[in-house]
Length: 81
Image 1 (spheres, rainbow, N blue to C red):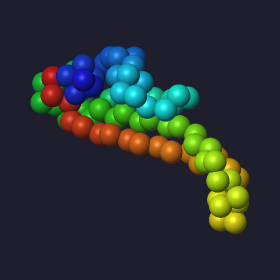
Image 2: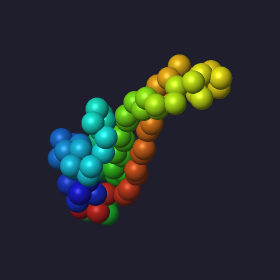
Image 3: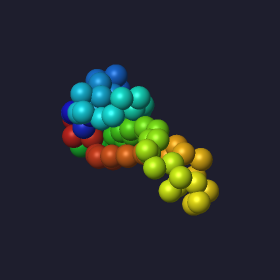
Image 4: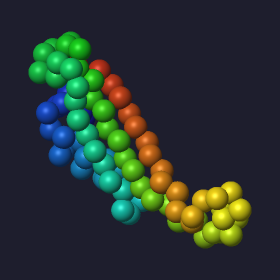
């Protein structure tokens, strides 16, 4: 979606949330470079961040983790339009 509509950051973020991500996920989207030129040098970057609290907190405590792990996924792709 974002490679065809790089200026619609709200649309990209709503597509992330519609993809079945866990509740509380925060999406961010943007475009860097030349995003208005066909076959330009623009790159769409979409990131989803979510905090995960495992049930087995004791297992993670010995590793120095406070019980919440922040998970992040990022996708980058060149703009097509």
